[in-house]
Every structure is written in structure tokens, then in C-alpha cells.
Length: 359
Ligand SMILES: Cc1ncc(COP(=O)(O)O)c(C=O)c1O
Image (tube, rainbow, N blue to C red; front, top):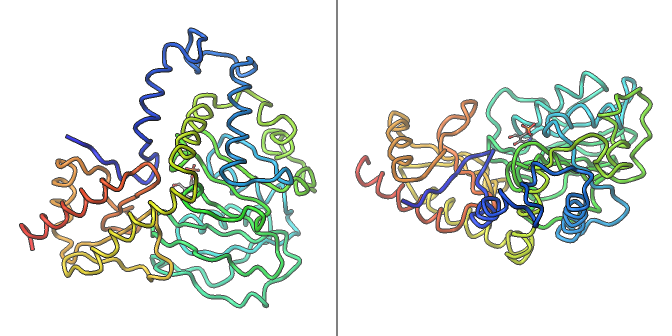
């Protein structure tokens, strides 16, 4: 049975990447060892790291004005690294909130800086991006932070936020590499790897070099961006296996035709699923169409009593991890880069059949 994995993260990897990992396990690059067993200071590993950085820069068009860093600790570590490096207790930071992860980010930031949100923070499940008047923002705030794609709610920004000139920082954990954007619009971008860049263990950070090493705070060496920029992320023993998997995924993205080609496929995938849900009386999606996510598609059964049956039968049919996050309920199909269009077709066919037998 073909299995399609709709997990929100850790998420599906491309099949060819898994096959390559299996091939390399006993003998990586002629070393006679797996990549997990070689020194991160060895030529094989540093060559691999060089290729990874060059490919990331090529695919995302990142100029030398930016440092690229691989940092352990997940996206959540960035919630404190950003304010402690770039702001201070008497500094200010602005957060746009459109879902769960933005709320976590501002909560953590508020421990280290004067963090304010662009609009009142709601306890409701977000189904849109709250509007705000950018001219009211303090232009001397240290940074403006937003979450480009809220993974739980499926709420995605399709245009840049207005920042009133405040440096823009973004949590792109669930949509980096899924669509084309201009890095030059940002001061800082971060994404943990386990959705579209490989596996858990590293966070990819892009930061303007002139922002690095400016902190007014006394920082632990391991949470100072300067440490990672100066050593090219080789200060301590880095998470070598996730790093290697990231390179395999970047090679795969390039082989697909790059980010623009990936984005075109993602558009086809998500449109198919939204169209189907929108034309159904059995399923629904509650998110404002102008900010629906191309990579996390939440949907609900009109009759919630059928949820458990839906989850069991879909899983039995090889459609895995469709349960929505408990904070949101219903179902969620995470259709990241590695989920093929065939997975969407199989999901829609299953949903039709489920409706036919239970509607
Ligand atoms: C948008 C977003 N930000 C942050 C996180 C937290 O990432 P991590 O668990 O790597 O810290 C997640 C995890 O799903 C996420 O989806």
C-alpha cells in the first residue's frame, strides 16, 4: 500500500532522500562510515557543509550581505535568541500575531524586551490576519516579527507586512523553501528544518551581517549569533546528521527545478484540496480565502461525530497523520514540498468515498 504522510512536522521526506540516506548509511562518500560517525572537522564533512551553504544561497538567492547559520534548539530557541541579540529590556519589538506560534514567540520575547502586538491578541482560533495601522507603529522599535505561515491554523501571509520601516524578522518554519520570496526584504529569517528542509535538530537562520554582534546584553556564547556567523556554525559539535539530510533535501529541491517549480506544484496541490472542500457540503474550511495556507490545509467534517471514524479509516487507507492540532480540532493535511500531487489525489478520492458511505 502506498502511504502518504500528512504530518505537520516532523514531516514527510522525499522518497529519493530516504533512499540516499539508506545507501549512505554504511559508507558515506567512500569514508567507510556513516556521516554520523565522522568528525565534523573532517574534510568530507566541511566540504558537505560548504556545498550546503552554497546551495541554500543559490536556491534562496541569499547575498553575502547575509550570514547563514545552522543553530540547534529549534525555532523556539529563536524566540529568545532574537530579542536577546537584537533588543534589550528597555528596547521595543513589534509582533504581528495570526496564530499559535506567533503567540508563543511574543510570550517568550516579552521576557527580554518590551514586546507589543500590532492588534489585540485573540483567544479564538485565528482564521485571518488581524488588520492594523502601520503608521501607529513605533518606527524606532528594534524589529518587527511575524510568522509567515501559522502551521496549526493554516493562516499564511501572501504579502509582506507593513512595518513602518522597522527591520523585518520572520518565523518561516513551515513555509521556507515552499515559495519564492525576496530575502532582501528581511533583516532575519529562521526555520527549523523538520518541515521542508530535512529533519529535526537544526534551525536555518538567515541574518543581515550588520545586525550580528551588536547586542547590549551579556549573552551566553552558544546563543550569540556572532558565534555561529564567525565559525560558520562550527563552534561546538553541530547536529551533523540533520545537516547532511538538509543538503540531500536541497539537492532534491534543485532537481525539481528550484523553488519556483516547487511553488507551482504546491499551488496545484493546495488549490485542488481547497476547491474540493469548498464545493462540499460535508467538509468545510474556516480560513479567510485571502490568507489560506498553501502548505497546511485544515478542514472540518460538518458532523464532528464522524472524526474518529474518518481518522481511523484514512489511516487504514495509507493516509497518515490527518488529525488537526488539539487547539484547532478537525483535520489538517500538511502538504509540504515532499508530499506529491498523487497524495492530494488519493486524499480527495478517500474524502469523496468517505462522504458517499457516511454522508
Ligand atoms: C511556524 C512554527 N514556528 C515554530 C515552531 C516550533 O518549532 P520547534 O519545535 O523546532 O522549536 C513550529 C513547530 O511546528 C512552527 O510550525
